[in-house]
Image 1: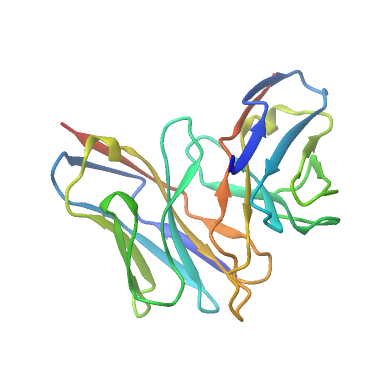
Image 2: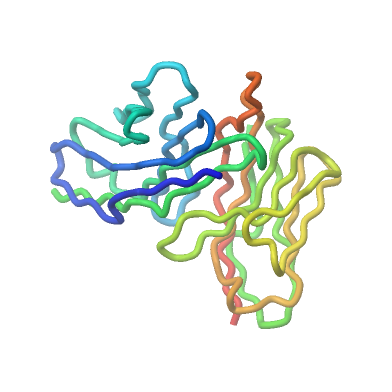
Length: 113
Length: 118
């Protein structure tokens, strides 16, 4: 079985300051991990993915995430927030079996001017 | 490439009515999925399919049915709609990673269907 926990339901930052969205996962085998972003009333867009290659993964729009097996974490970061980053972010784990993804409950990122 | 398309975008149903949510993908993906997203929650898997003619239940299948007669299409059927089915429904597709693990690759999502049952 696999699961994912997003440690903050809501994060608020000022424009130009760093972003940290935290995610811990649980999996009985080596997982694939993803971050998706969902802007209001839109579908989900893939930000980045980890599939057992490099542990530091770079994604779109300046986001990156680091896979830490010892901490079972996959936190999402960005050096400088932009107003357009305001959205809901989902950490997702994938495994074999049902060929499906397990979603975290989401973190809403608010960016203040 | 249109990617994953869903129709309709919005729908209001009365309790007990039926409807079909349409989903089509043009990426030749074998795997397709239906999720629902309730307010303030993550997505929950309703049904999935690993190829034409093959479907299986996900986490929350009750009250829904699916079919997969072609690679491209994966419609979701609601029979006897209930208020608990008020949600946003997302269709997605993916391919296997291609490595020996058989893990799912990233999924591509449609824009969603917002359904209200009153």
